[in-house]
Amino acid sequence: MPKNQEPLDANVQAKKKSLQKIKGGCHCQAIRFEASVNSEAIILNCNCSICKMTGFQHLIVNHHDFKLLSGKTSLSYYQFNTQQAKHLFCQRCGIKSFYQPRSRPKSWSINVNCLDDFDPDKWQFNDFDGINWEQAQAELNHNY
Ligand SMILES: [Zn+2]
Image (tube, rainbow, N blue to C red; front, side, top):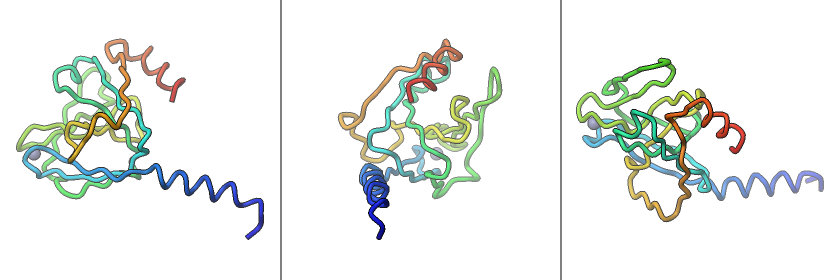
């Protein structure tokens, strides 16, 4: 192997090491999913009108790192305001375990409260000022 490829391989290995498999779903278990996330990902606590009510704590995962294992036909959705986010929930138990956020069109946002064996001490949490969405989004794009 040429010497100049070594740093790249080291990077790939480091990335693999920090990836973590997570699993979760809704309360009645109709909806189940798994995903790969960077273990250094930051969980966002949002104060917008809907997240405040649901207690949704956001873990953002690329669409291609997420797999819906079951429950596709159990999903319903709710939209409001700009109609860009798609707030998915289980038709049976009403739990919103993941959804399509407005802030990240190519990612899902998973509710960490819906994960199996979630240990909050192992993750970093930040606030997202969703009631002032445009400004909060600009800061998010700047910082992450
Ligand atoms: Zn359910």
